[in-house]
Image (cartoon, rainbow, N blue to C red; front, side):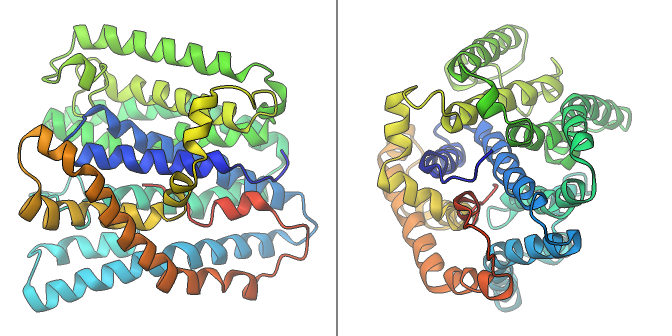
Length: 389
């Protein structure tokens, strides 16, 4: 896979971010699936970078250190700065009162394992950061696999994890059931577990590792049939589920239910659709496919949202709850729709200021510590603002 910048992937990142904002704003339930799109996209981009680095002549230790330092300079400043602000809020206002309970997990990127804590409480200031914990664990461990193992092993390893991940979700669900945990908590605990998303990262990562963008000559057909399977399975599940949402707002993919073993199979089908979409966008054989979608994803404003989506993801729930819902946004659905664009604009402005005046200072340090004297990789530039929600 050649390293080339694909503008529409920034658009995919923006699309995933906007969808998760609609979910938290209460406009749609189904749009929670955009979390999977982030994970699959991360798997594709990060594995692509690591795969290219593996082919370079530098030592394995140098490559690993280079990757971690460059990732840290992109991710840590905003994340740690945000935790510092939350800490000051707690210190001066004792809000939220339970912040000290979760701080050790937040600072160590293990917050995704807090869902089973007794008297667990969610908070829009930091509950959504569980996804960043999973991303960071992926960043720490996946380079070890890529850099320190043979290429043949990596191909088999990624394939095996795609098969193993649903089994992990099944076993986790059964284990939690045996402990007598309530169904909704089980669904969340499985959802938040890193093992549950191995197939998401690997479905994205297997595209560059197996060069699927060049081997699959009709990726649009793969996307079409993955969507057909996805919708069919969702419709069947919906008929037999206890979902309280109408079908058009749920499509049979309700991540708080486990009655039809949704926690086992629906992530696999969602990830498959996400990987198929990415394959269409990166394949040289499908440059004329889905023209309207490409036009939307490559629009300058959408691309820019994609570039600052990390900050938008970190800030979006805070702005929603403590500004719009408290002072501006009414309870009825129409009012929420009308205020959604101003809400996105406010979050974008905050993220743009953070990126331009704070995060960019650290991004510029990446080449200072690890100057890449080889041909610049434009693919790597697309991962500089990878949020992974």
